[in-house]
Structures are given as structure tokens and as C-alpha cells.
Image (tube, rainbow, N blue to C red):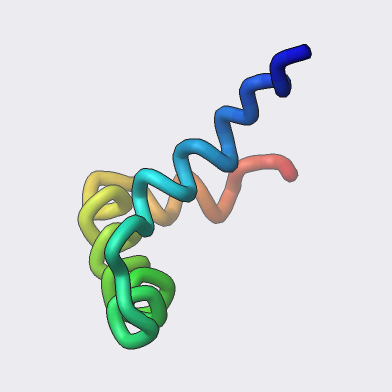
Length: 53
């Protein structure tokens, strides 16, 4: 019987392969902040603040 494919685990393994501890920590500190700023630069923050949650 074959094991079920686990896309989230496969993605994580592929994305973090070869990282040492420092690089892995950077992935969730500096790189995350840089990615957030990059992807959010076109957001209209006033419209977002008025959006119903």
C-alpha cells in the first residue's frame, strides 16, 4: 500500500531543503517581512480598514 500524497509536507520539505538553522530562522523573520511588504504595497489601507470583517 502506498502512502497518501501530502502536498503541504512535500512543499515544506522542498522549500526548506538544505537550510541550516540560521537560514530557516531568517525564512520566518526577515524574509517574511520583506515578502509581506512586497505583496501589500498596492493595498488601499483606508479601504481595507473600512472593510467588514
